[in-house]
Length: 422
Image 1 (cartoon, rainbow, N blue to C red):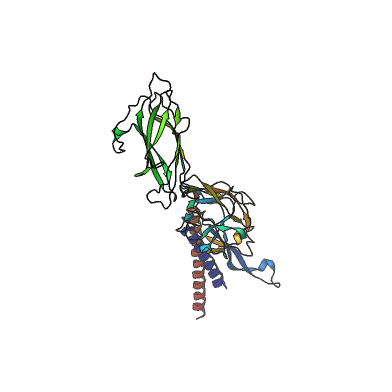
Image 2 (cartoon, rainbow, N blue to C red):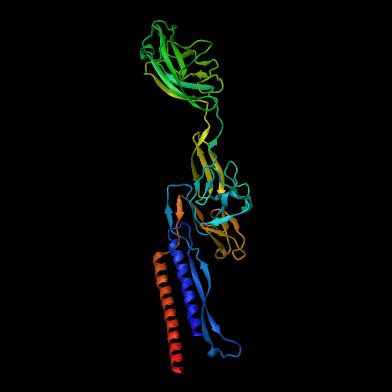
């Protein structure tokens, strides 16, 4: 019987060393949770044996208990690196499969080629759907959806109105000869702004100002005129067939005519449709002794917004920002909690699955239903302590050696008895 007692000790120690080795192997695995082997003694006894005469028959490994203590946090520069400080698990669906949900503590997420937010195994992060204000519109893990980042936002709006507010210097000289935009000596000043065609492509619109007459200081009724030539790229912007519009100023420098003009239809290079543009200068445009200056410029066109970044706030709401200024809430990160997480079944790759022992998942979000807080730009590391595990490994190895020694001693005693009888 003593052979089997020592053998049970060898087997239990070997199980203990295997568990400790597994812990050490995953010391650098993000979100990994260590395990601990629990043992129980075996007593060979029955009702006919007095309790004080019971003899032990060895040890048995009752099970490997998972330890869900918090791992240390490491800061990263990726907004999609998420960590839960406290209880809870991220819900993910392998390959976006709606029939299966796994749970993980590894929050290292990224964006795949289809703009899905996935982990290193390609599983899709699950979020609760939200409306335009970021308010959750459906709760429960059955209502979660895969988080996807739309690559664009909005629709292209062609520019139909451009507004300037500027000053043309009253001391500017009067130009003669033919206007040539490539010859700065044929115009006094110029300014540029960005406009958009029907497909949202940004184009540069440049307007050249050329003074053609000056007011007579002795005549209060006299006026001063400027010709404005506009080009979108290399194409001239015409009005009524004319390649320019005329701005007229009073002797006091106030704009009296030409403050607004609508162009003929123009199809910019690369555009698929024609558009007209109203160029307005407004009452703030003047001709005074100050140097040429542009106080303001604006236009009403816009391009399709391109995805520029993503943020996750403390409540778990994911927002995408775009080049056109749009900010869209896309969902709230779903967190699942369990009444008995030690009962979860390990699947490998940092995944767990629910069991009857763990209980059904409890739908939660950051800071609710017992779930911990959510941190963006952080990764939870393994909760394995190398020093502690190495000490445990030494102890398990000594236990193994002691049981091996006991087995060898039993063998020697048996051999001695056999030799005596022979």
